[in-house]
Length: 150
Image (cartoon, rainbow, N blue to C red; front, side, top):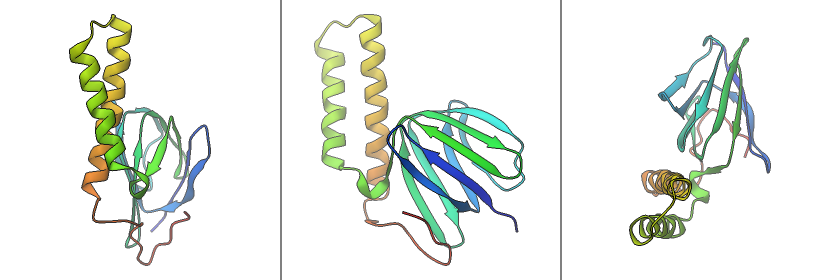
């Protein structure tokens, strides 16, 4: 079976540069799963969970937005605004960010632009919190026969 070759890059660093069997990511049109032989496409990433599977290994990351491009020959490039592994997320900090955003929305009169910024911050914080809670019992990557470059 052929493999996907993908690269996940943020403005700060290359988060992943490896082969995988499948990649699922959150887009503005919903969650998509990319398998070998997928047609070329470009999509907008939204805050949420990115899942990478290779053999018996799984890698879970939170992304805050960006773009995904599926190129010919099973090449995938993800340009993310920010990305972090599930075990890097500070759940308490994410909870505090959610509370700050909710408080800002209810206690102050916001302009349309400020409201959009606070709503986006709330969405990013909720996505981080959801990924952290979903994988709280996993403190490191799940490894099996596939090997991930961390």
